[in-house]
Image 1: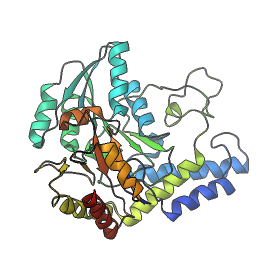
Image 2 (image 1 turned 45 degrees about the vertical axis):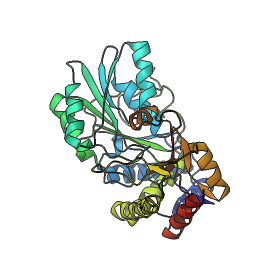
Image 3 (image 1 turned 60 degrees about the horizontal axis):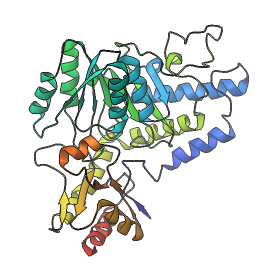
Image 4 (image 1 turned 60 degrees about the vertical axis):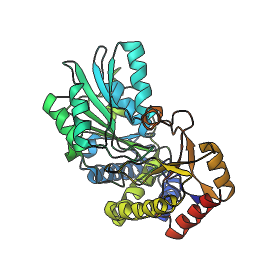
Length: 373
């Protein structure tokens, strides 16, 4: 079984990530922030060390780094915590449902207004499309850094500058970019949301929200924090204000190990390796006239390739490849806007997404399997 569905979740995980989870079960079994005994204290120290690791990796501050269940959780915290009734937001036409659905719910239920900006091959056209949609009541631009369907990279630094120019909050979905692209808070992002289980190589059930605190986030969840327990209100300081209930200690420690692995390997080296895998795959697909690849000349792409085979649905293609031992994702990838944009809303695409652990011989074997289909 060879996994090429790493855009959903990287697998296999580094040995250090597996060891970190085992150590959490063996040694760090306290409830972080609850109690002053030795077991809790040493567990709390490990959680804080993980918070420091994540903050440093993205150029944020530890106290402004929030542990979440996944990127969807982080995005909901940011979107619903920033956007108020009658506000206006702008999203791109490549957004995942983690952005589209909370925004759509707020449009239905809270009178929020939403504009969708088309993403072009030309970055200047993309920026102009966002600029043209800004209104006096625009509260936030919410956009992915890289499409989870095609891998197209948005001009997020320029969009962040546009937000700063108009005092608009920039909420970034980094699920397909973080760990591969050199994403930093200094890029101008106000709130960065990302998954811990994808390019950061942590366990599933992990995510991050990092804020520069320019735009205060109202809590979405309420409950125990281990601090200011006598008050009916959530604490007014981070991270406690946005973290309630028992944290996923094992997951958080795995995320720390995953980020350390990415730092040691280097995002540039990871990007180069995965891009080499994609280029080899593309070179093989280009010899097959029955295959359609969803990339446009002139655009920049993260290491993801979407394709279809003539006369086969995406699900049929993925099923046949699965029978040969290759794991690829088929369908709409939870991103109907992106599929409308590339004309595949009726059947979706097959998505190829390598990781640092895939090899060129595995790519060749997959290419040959597709040729045989």
